[in-house]
Length: 108
Image (cartoon, rainbow, N blue to C red; front, side, top):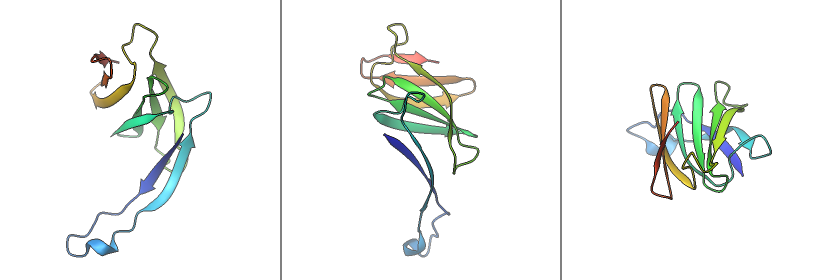
């Protein structure tokens, strides 16, 4: 699984045809990341929070340099976290609210 990031300028209201996003950077799922089966991404400041359905977890990426996103941390389902098949995420203040396929909401 490869997470790719696009850099896009605001789309002009009068000429939508001039909107041309370009590829900036990416990060690959490997032994240090939880990106397999990425479902949803939530960006807050310099961080991207990604739910990963196959890995049953949440990956946190530092995207302060969009050309080189880096792994900051991750959490996976261990039977106490209710992260089986996470499919949605919202971050507010110091917490991430994650919904999963097992009809549960986890607060991280």
